[in-house]
Length: 284
Image 1 (cartoon, rainbow, N blue to C red):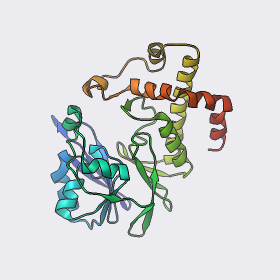
Image 2: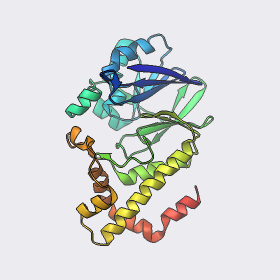
Image 3: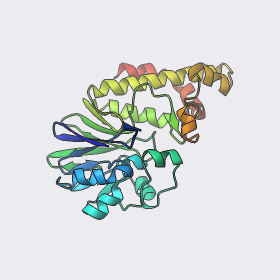
């Protein structure tokens, strides 16, 4: 499945593999005046090629290394001659992609090795200039792209939703929160999200996500300080593990979010003592 939608000067592509006619997991990527931001999953390669073949495509930029974003880099580079630009860590992973879990192969397909070039501090798209902003958390190499004259933020997988309470293995809660602070300060009006597509009220959505996660981290910290076990904290804060944990071969779950908070517990303890949260919120 590949659905094309025009959002002013931005073209949104909504891609997914279907099962019994229903999308399994949706990924969005975007086109702006010769620039493609992410490429969608490999399962949609032929549809992506047909959708892009008649567009003036000059370059591709990538938000991060995961296969639902890089899956068609090889095809676009090889068959259409389009250069791909990415963070150095993304380049490293793309050159020799690791084996991935079966569920990821089912949902998106793997990513063939692909060549990419180092990303600069900004990237042009016709009359537009997008700032490349490193926003770690979801992955070490994650980059968002911000167009300041219109307040457009191409947020990759940094946002995803306000009340999400699960992580992939390796995600870092402190880096997430730091990245959210960085983006809130830009005051974007629109988000172009890798999961949900175009979203209004960008700054307010980012603030709500930040507040939701900080409140969750505060609850974990208070229970940890009270001497509660990891199991007790998990039960009180998260309830049960989600079913997707088992489908993902233990690759994605609420327990990894808790693990990241506890691994950074000294950060949250210090932040509470300094009342840095209230100080930050007053400045939003």
